[in-house]
Amino acid sequence: MNPFSGRTIQVVRDLSIDEQLYLYNTAREIKSALRTRSDVDRFRINDPDVGVYLLFLEDSTRTKESFRNAGKFHAVRVNDFSAQGSSIRKKESVTDTVKMLYGYNSRSIFILRTPMEGVCRWLERDMQHYAEKHNLAPASFINAGDGRHEHPTQEFLDEFSFLEQTGWDRSRIHVALVGDLFHGRTVHSKVDGLRVFEEVYVDLIAPDDLAMPAHYVEQMDHHGFHLRFFGSIKSYLEQDRIASSWYFTRLQLERMGDRLLEKSDSLRDAVTFRKEFVSRVPEGTRFFHPLPRHSATPTIPSFLDRTQLNGWDEQSMNGYFTRIAQIGLLAGHLGDDFRGEAQTWPEVPDDFVEQVPARPKSKPDYKIGIKPVESGIVIDHIGRGKDVEAIWNHITKIRSILRLNVISSHGVFPSARDDRSYKGLISIPNIEPFDERIIKMLGAIAPGCTVNVISNGAVQQKYRLRMPRRVYDFDQISCSNESCVSHQDNHENAIPEFRRRSDTTFVCLYCERPHDFQEIWRTDEPG
Image (tube, rainbow, N blue to C red):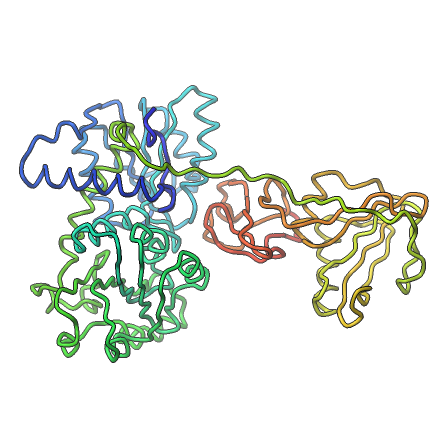
């Protein structure tokens, strides 16, 4: 079975490193064959019953045109879906639009650019059920840029271009990322894309207002990248270790608020290359840019176009070859000879509940103001170690989310182990033991707490809760990112889901925005 057929590319790591290298080698063969006018029929799908849909809900020239021409190369049915002349303008959801288009071909590949983040991941999951119901072949979804999140297809052509520059030597790369690193999705994709190189040095050049978001920096550090930070090109060139690859991004003015727009001139000045800088750049350095450049105020000025620094022209051409390869792989036409480690996603077990020994005796008046229950549940160790106000807020949130509108008591008390730290407690008499669903919610709301099941005045069962690895299928959870496909204001009805990243952090399945474990919970009624 072809390992690529029917796959989705929402983020770079949807392909393993071996699969990415296979993609680059395939694109290299295609580029060579086209440049030497050799036979390219073996790369072509040549099946008009395969449909490639271009759903671009944001403006695009290079990405859209390279995908359109890549589809034409394959001699498949290419459908250019115009949002301006469609029901999208009548507030139809992207999900419903894709369902309508899905059944028109024996195999469908959807290429989407949207202001919403995580759309391809949601469609991958939702359309799997749709395909099974209607006996359709699995569709593939390619993210051609989603909001401020990622742009994996741009990353593939960028890494292809870096590999060409290094002569296909993957042992080491030193790259400077310059410009709007906060809003620029192409640089966000490099967190995973640069991992095809064995040793990675990254210099991040941006003023504080445009700095790379902290969670991407943390991921780079986790991958073992060697990181340095500079506020401007000028300060970068005042030291000696200059990267041989520079990757520029334009200022994403359309994604900035008024505060940054007022400062745009000074921000742009910090990341714009000037003539007096040329002598400080080492021989053999290449500049790259995802394009387009701003015609009036480019960060790579036009005086560099005819210099040896120009790597962006060839880089732009490489989008055609890498996208031919991507379509061929996901259609199942290319990739049968792949040998390597495929991307796999481990199962996520629900191992967040630990039963611990219970003391078969009641706990008399050790909590001032709370009478020990004869029968019921006591939630203990809430927010242990936090300050008193934070614990009170935590207790309020638990009661609201679990809708514990019953006769009960609660409070904040010194810890029995250390009277200098505090913990919260909720005591609920005459209530049935929590079911698995409530236990899972509680583990995600208050990791580290314990649940004591009381009967006849004594603790009969005691459970310590950890953060679940996966939280989903609750009306009370929501991604805080207003651009996420799962945010309720986008009306895509995408089911929110979070995966645990650390002992205190969840990540949205779709947009990958990190959340503190308390931030995923809504206290309002879902609407």
